[in-house]
Image (cartoon, rainbow, N blue to C red; front, side):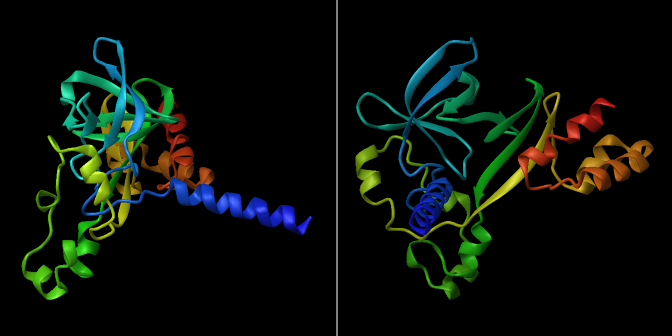
Length: 223
């Protein structure tokens, strides 16, 4: 019995590890390699190809038939499906979405590299912290990989500095993205509903960093 519980715990750890984003200054992507995914075009058609999400640019990259990384124009697609993950463009960035009551209402999460942490611990590619303090690392300094060979980039994937990833949460209502904080959501619903919102948040114990908890906010908006 103990052995079974131990194996189950190991599997849970392994699944958690796979779920974490492993990105580097030499590989600022959502997935550790390009995944077979579906690009849902603006006209409703679907196109299958190896794709990945650039964490800093918020763009969709794909591998063409010559093994070269390319960027899909933003206006070319409406959504992206990679395994069980769905991404939609929100505020100019591709974000992972959790469906709400309908197509116009959902929770969006933007995963982005925290460059402030990178600067505090030393710059990209081993740059000393003293240098990084005067030459701050920005998204412009990190590679975009467009028009580069996929296999060559993969060979050097882990040679750079590991990126710390932070998540930004948004409540999307009729195409408008509201940052998922108590302050921003209260401002969006207006002062006339302040008392109702306070009571609702207290009753439902909303976690502003959990998609399933944030979905409850649509119940408040529907009242």
